[in-house]
Image 1 (spheres, rainbow, N blue to C red):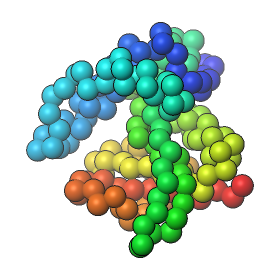
Image 2 (cartoon, one colour; image 1 turned 90 degrees about the vertical axis):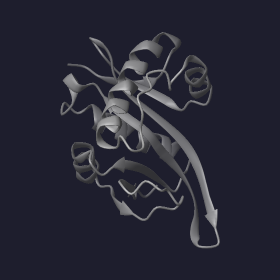
Image 3 (tube, helix red, strand yellow; image 1 turned 135 degrees about the vertical axis):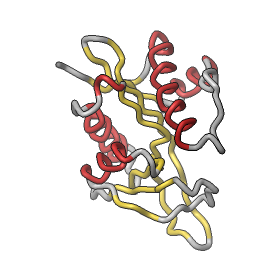
Length: 166
């Protein structure tokens, strides 16, 4: 199977929405005290904004879009934190049927390209502690746990970082 990672296009909206709903369902199961049923949280205007900001990528296979990654660029600066600029993974989803086939690693390779091209200090992400499959994949790729820097009330969130030299 051939997969490529590319920026999202307007015709990708529906498959991306389906993928993001897979993650929302998991969050609802894991933390019903925090997450509620909502299948319209990702709408066309959010999608268009992310495309304009070059902040949404897809994994394209012969069978269609089977993965999505949303990113933001963060400048972290405070009296108690080391000042840095990072690419932050807001979400990374691979279709249930395609997990374990290397798509996540292709997304990480794209993140490394972005980090190097923009001369950023690192790559960071947040993962739900109950998402052990994702957590183990991140660790396998070289991510390690860091402390939260945004005072998140989510006691099940684990923040992770990948150090790379330019």
